[in-house]
Length: 153
Image: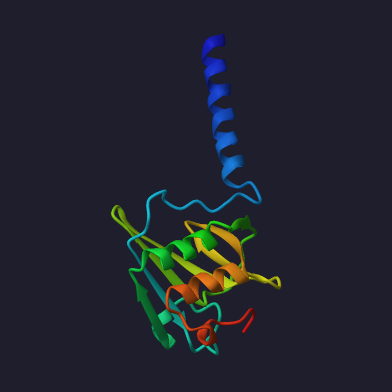
């Protein structure tokens, strides 16, 4: 009887520890350890559309693609600077899709709600990314600097 209770307690502790690590503020964004083979970036150019409207079909789209490994790695390096922050209801400014041999990884990018940052939503979490590194990565992937939406616009 005592052994069964100890197993239950151990399982509860493992579940709690797993949840605590996953939701830990400041946790880094982790991407697959292999190099992405392509990157696709979509920017919603009609930013007068309602921010909470998550249907990009109602907005004009600007699409950019690259298979340049060096450019993709620059974007991935910027994304990996991301740290978990609190969620919010803002709609995306665009999307980023990274292609891997095992499948594609898609994320939305959002206004950063703090000067000097953008945010990405990936697998239910929000990560804050330094603006300079993020825009440099987007530009490396072929996005003209002038079409990258500015914070809060």
